[in-house]
Figure 1: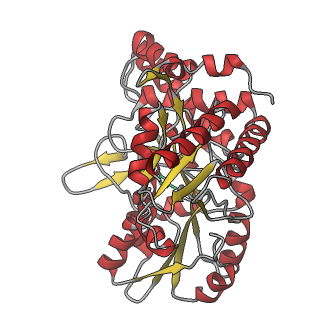
Figure 2: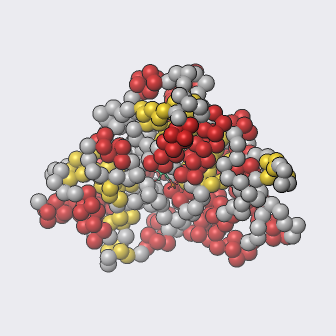
Length: 405
Ligand code: PLP
């Protein structure tokens, strides 16, 4: 199978017990656990390198600045961006999307314009667009889904036109696991010169992302979902857009010169990084990217795909359990419901058995409305999960079914 015991050992938390049972952690789409490499990198920064960056003349400040900018270069090559100026560090996907929505809208969104998102978006890729559309009197348009939980690309093509100013879609659905054809989407959009933002929060942990191959204009992701620290994220943006867009937040670092009459702004990427950055965690994010690269996406995908197929098949055999969505391409997420048991009750009982899953609307309430369910139970996998853990989940669900039937 290729999954080595040492790999699990490099995640210290996986050795702990929950409710007197060995932890079975299947809530990876919410956040992944962290390997020792990431934890140690953060600790080393505070033990040996801590200093504020970019403006110090002293040894530690230079050391921290170098480390921070090296991390930017590592992330550039991690997603194959064209230049470090195209990598903006943020607090996460949510902040990255907010940055683009507010800055882009201020410059380009006018009354009567349209922004296109999809019915499977996370609230993070709905609400910022809703707010800027309201503010600029623009219209939010929604790409519908097919019965199997995929984007309806025919409808998508039909809704684009002169009024469409930007398209924002997820790479991988956090609630269904659907992998969207992002290259095809940018191809369709660019024929009409419409820029595309991709929400990659659920993609970078599982698949190689090459922003130049996808040819997206913006790509957003979170460190904590890819074995990195919380409070870190990335906005990739093509330089031609970022150069033209106004700053999102203002203050120190993002300026060239300030007087009471006028402020001029710093060059990219600093124009979009106001204030003291989260240096330690950015270094942790770099360590996470290195961890993934050394493991290799081929190894990650082959293990996670096998796990997904195995778990899906077993779950489908459980009485009155319904799998939600059956997209052709799916990544590491299974959503399901018992026809007669509330998802929350299922989640609580699984927790009693040491199994962590997520229940509820998964920050995708419009998607739940579309599916006609109050929520689902979501099991999501990472590289350290095992077939044995899938069996533990399945057996626990069979037990719950027997208890509550
Ligand atoms: N987009 C998707 C698809 C997600 O799954 C998530 C988090 O669950 C987000 C955006 C928001 O990410 P964060 O909370 O790290 O900003």
